[in-house]
Image (cartoon, rainbow, N blue to C red; front, side, top):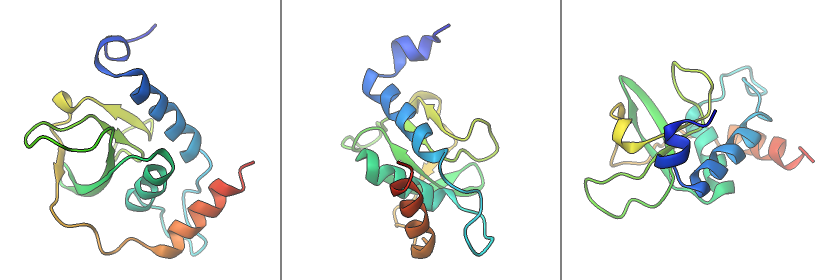
Length: 131
């Protein structure tokens, strides 16, 4: 069964981006080579680069979080839909969220400065080697 959101809320392009994000993320490890958790901040940046979608740093609820917008943010007060590649506290990990229901996402004005280049490289190499 297709949901109301699949038929009426999300565009075919957004649904394709969701499908591609799921395909990408399933190749990523849970932990990096040093045994540290791979975080949403790195995952969002790799998936965003592949899909050509803008990354947003901020908060989801009380947690620091990073996600993708399904389009550039051009209008103040009107957010595009969210493609979340590593949803905190939910399963499945990759979800498409309508901006009208995404009240838990709060943007930060500054980009994160703790994104780990070594993890970014590891994820990129995993993605590149997937065949």
